[in-house]
Length: 133
Picture 1 (cartoon, rainbow, N blue to C red):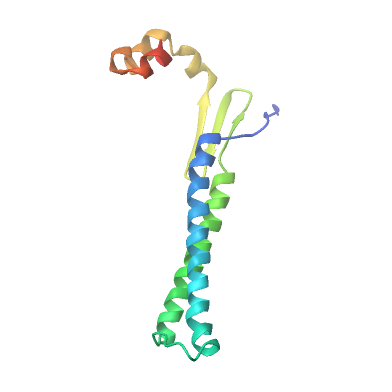
Picture 2: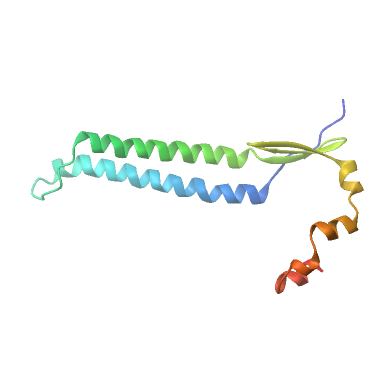
């Protein structure tokens, strides 16, 4: 059995998903603080008049908090599970919703003229022209 190469993380994919799990975790922590504050503050500070919230509203806020934290954990695990791995005859691209084997022969058959037709130089504007040339 041929030896497979080392797994390499997909950096751009990971950074893109990293933005979202941090954001949803922040929303979850904020909603948790709101739910705890709405429950504890009227009991601790009776001299101030707070809006009397029903238990149903507190449960809805706590449920939204749980959903946001669960979503951030799922996004965190998705970000860490995408990788590319070289094998003997193919390049294996693995993402949570995409699994693809790319043959080395296919990449060798693609010549420069085909790439020119796929990505025409005339379509680039301004500073992108210098990067493409």
